[in-house]
Image 1: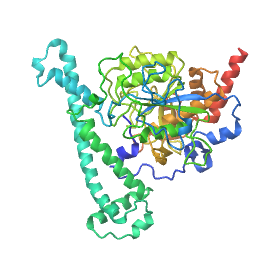
Image 2 (image 1 turned 45 degrees about the vertical axis):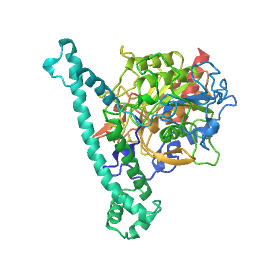
Image 3 (image 1 turned 180 degrees about the horizontal axis):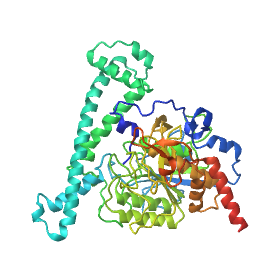
Image 4 (image 1 turned 180 degrees about the vertical axis):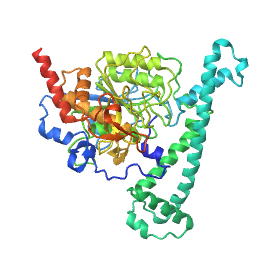
Length: 524
């Protein structure tokens, strides 16, 4: 499930990100200004890109991407074997008119926008099997499954209650801020202007006071308005769709969901109803550099393959597996996955696809999640661990850091399960319709790493996926200070306890490490 951290935490009025974040801060490394990005600017100055740098295809498996964005369109992957819009599968890969990628959750006449959480889908399946039976009515061989059913019921009920309560709170706040927005007409107003403004109606006054209170922690009024709108949409979706046992939109796709071998379902409409998340992710990796438009991507010689899999809700394992296989079969060297969920319907099918990618020398990069949880102890899917206990050797799991070399307060972590951290707070990037915005989450940190990997691989194309992973991970910038553990107010911990490599990705150091790896191979 794709999550923006501001929208899922905004109901707690304390602002998580009170410090100012310059645009494109994540590309810099300026210790004197406490800006600890990935050191891209220095790397590009100090290490000249080779004339024969190889173009790297990065597959963005996400919720949809605006392939016509002014800052992305020239870096969008094109399937040259496919003739556009002729309704023929010219390259015989099973997908008709897949010119820039594929939408695995699209149908003949519309696209899936909302879907359930996997929790809801699993619970619905169990309800079909067990109905209202009591424990005494359950056969001995079914008791383990029945216990799981009861556990899911409790978890679902708790989540629905929490979501309903927060949604009720948001609706109330939104009523007041909407009243204010109606009066001021333009929400892009300064804090000073809003302080001086005297609303004519009491509801608008309450809205003004609420926003001003939030602005005390460093936010701008427009940011608060946007967070409220985002939060309303998210929790509206949680209550009415994600956790709604009566809602199942899979009929839109029209496939046999239980037929794991069937491909070709979906359509080639790549943005879907809401392409914000995927467009933002794609821009971080591959927005065109130095073109005087909104922002610069990290990779310098790159193409973005768009694969739409993630709805407003949890992605489905069959779609994830097919998207990974599509990416591999169509030339992607790196796959970015800025999504995740707490339950899996069919881990085997995803594991098999990941094994396939690993066997084809493809690097998989995945966001660790935004629940400030220890992934060593809590489940998070998909992941690098196969069901037999072995680990994918070409997988990088990414947590999020802030400008001060701290783990982001929301970031998941894990000494065994998370590999590295990368900037993930207020990352400025592309939005649909030629717009730009900053968003926060491990969803942003993962494409930062994907962009770095693509850049390093373009410099050193003879290296393997395992060697690119080694270059990135062996060269991380390791903070020496203790940091506050995500989810804690005061508990301090060494950064080395948060991830296997104990640090934050650094482009210049990674390029040097890759050069050393290449040199060692030549000498050998």
